[in-house]
Length: 178
Image 1 (cartoon, rainbow, N blue to C red):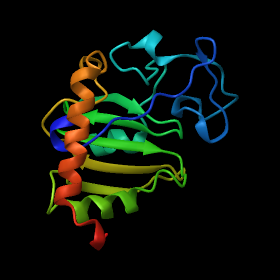
Image 2 (cartoon, one colour):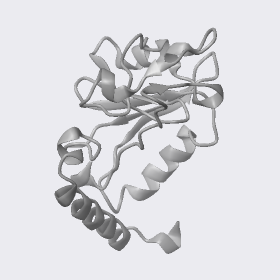
Image 3 (cartoon, rainbow, N blue to C red):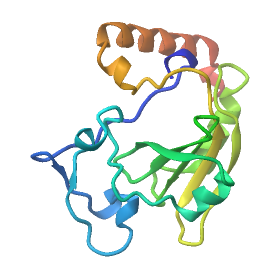
């Protein structure tokens, strides 16, 4: 979120218009069986450039945490996590397989440490489900995602805003205490 010093995910690579999930990069909807080639996300949801929305099943852990409220996928990563918006952005849950890139307890610690200095989401919880998949549940922040199409179409505005946000972050957070 540009106005709260956050950022977006990097789109996964496409190969001839098809993304081939495998190994640790497999998609959540392909947890069982052999992964198949998926269309690149921009073909499915052009406003969410990294996400293939077809056949995505809301994981039980995410549904439980959402407690009957609306849940929508809003982003993914190349290492297999998917972030879900709960209640239209009031909260977010990131869910995915164990990996060195996705360590919810570490992320919760970093958010708690950073919170006195800049606006960051409050951590509502983190854990692991019965299958070993991890999750991080946090509040939303006001603003628009830096990965939103409206910013992607205006790099002349978005890039300086991201630079200014990064400068504010470095000016406010005591990196020496990290």
